[in-house]
Image (cartoon, rainbow, N blue to C red; front, side):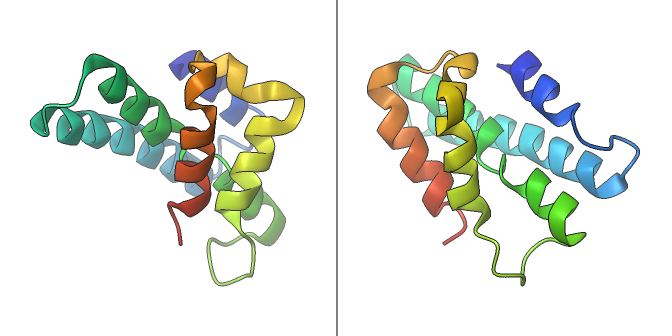
Length: 114
């Protein structure tokens, strides 16, 4: 999962501090998602799913920055764009997510900024 995300981010300007901040933000959200899921006593499956969602929740933000050179306040729906990225060419498969969980992932990515 981490390699796939790093591969995705590598297509962006890694010398750009905003791209790097967004990458590290996603990594922090991953860790926090796992801690919360564990504290709530979730099953292993649900903890793994929380980890996966945490890692890719802002996948649409990278194109947002590249397009507008800013985050937010530009009418760019990064949640919706993130879902489109995951659906395009079935990209979600790269993250080893159970196909039964696709809709949950799509909804989480779509609504996480709403």
